[in-house]
Image (tube, rainbow over all chains, first blue to last red; front, top):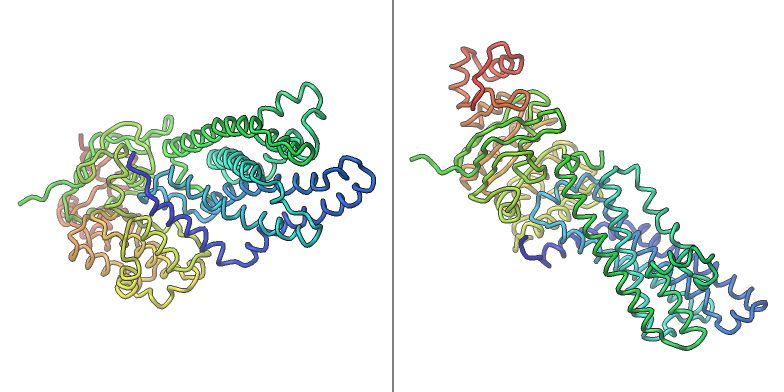
Length: 266
Length: 250
């Protein structure tokens, strides 16, 4: 394999930024759902604070959960939806006969997913300050670890979903939306993993996001930074991202064998 | 003096289960040649081009392009070649200039603005640089696709039906652009086409395919003479219908 070229990665990232720039609706859409979620959960928090001692103790529990959940959701969607754009545009074959290497395609998808996540969730995070007096940055330095772990997990799922769509066609596109929601109940976004039935808990602990949300609760409720949680999450993310990249590359190789790249998007 | 081969294909096959899309073809194309890959629908033209590009993995056989084994070392070769086809699109929502800028960078073109200005002038597309690619007519899209294929001044240019769906005037201009580029750059052109007058005008070598096999090769005039016909259209019909069978090359 030739060396990875930042110039080519930048070229592809530029393509996605052009796309984003070409439609203001897309930019609004990026921030729309995270903001709506934040507003909804903000009101729920205000209501529950009058009835729940735990929320009174840590008012930001639900809002932190929903905003961090959106990091995971947006990073996954940001990667897979952008990849689907290539398939819809019948542009994938053009890309793969250019000097762009598949690994560079992956890095470009990750880069643009990062941008989309920062824009989408960032606006909601900033709006939460005047709306509810809630500042996510109050989580302090652990927030950086939470953010990157959720980003990595989102990328891993995004690559697996993209591989699935490349293999089975655009009919499988809805999986991009459904996949992450199937994991949501297990991640302990709004409640501790211990709340889950005993037989589900081991499964929950195989998800990096579970460690992130437990770590978030530790900061908010106990004012403790659980480095061990972050390291477990990082370790799992390394494995999942490695799996996601391998499956994605193998699916491109398989598409080259099956001759499906010329038909993609049709 | 004979030019060295820049495309060397030996016993190339692509099988999909029992279907032999390409079945043990061998050919060479010399530097600076313009070669046509002809055959009816399903003859194996697009499959062959896709394998040369590394977009499709062969079942067996050997491909060397510019001295490099493909698909193994395709990354070394791809910056020196390019491809245009009306069946492979560019992003519709991006403007023409944005599309060409992205691809210029992907191909490592350094002075992108200068290159775009040259292509805009040569292909007469500068007037719609700021329009979304999706809003262009078929003829305009084909010219933009060709501009994309010429961005890196390719040594080898692969074209899949370069004038399909174009009106005669636009098609003629496209052929003029290709001839001019080939003359100026000394590039090697390989095109799949159903337009026999185009083949007669542009090509000095023809490879005829039927059912994945090469059934005839030679210069257009040579084939017309060999088949006793008045033009390539008639030769094509003979071969495609198996009326006068060409020799299956080993």
